[in-house]
Length: 272
Figure (tube, rainbow, N blue to C red):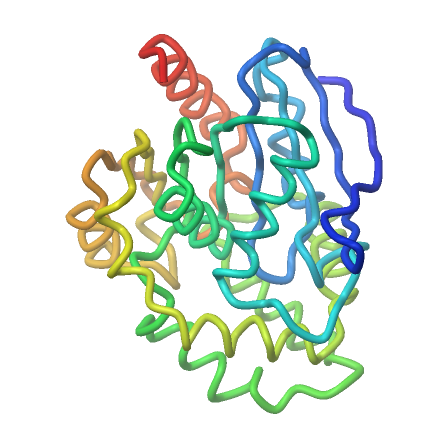
């Protein structure tokens, strides 16, 4: 799919890089990346997505080449940025595809602004980041004390820990470079926001059809965590990937693209 790149102002103090492609009159698909990534984390998935759909990806505040304010890194603020993006693009609603942190942001938008969300597809998702052992361990053990410049060795290990399978070396190096663009204050603010935010009280308000893609070798999200998510979100359904890690769209982009295409078709045909 061909794409165009631009920079979009979400407020007087925040602008973000954005890429989009596909027909402007089709149901939009908005891709939300994980913590410390950028829109480029969807590079392996992008060319495999249906060319008949409008696809939009952007780097969230603090990430990639987006502006990096001193605050606004809690899930509520990040969700408000997504709504601001929909407003700026004059999109009444979209299907949201979130990875990890992006899944938490997508769930919050779906709970607080349900009319803006036609469907949810979640990759490496949590019922809540508030009590996730992996997130708490990272925060208490490393991230809470990070200073500039953030150690490249830590970044590499962090990104490698998300994988259940190997990915192309060139792609992995790009991921590391994008994560290096985050100053220490963004790392700290993101993870502080994660451990302070509990998604669970709002999940019953999610009404959008929800596809949960989970790899059974995910070191951050257990099957018990997926079951908790499925129990909390009324319309959620799980698709499991044997041997898949936390970043399934990096490891198995062809299968993820196929599952997303089928899900999008179901959402659109349902008239939502």
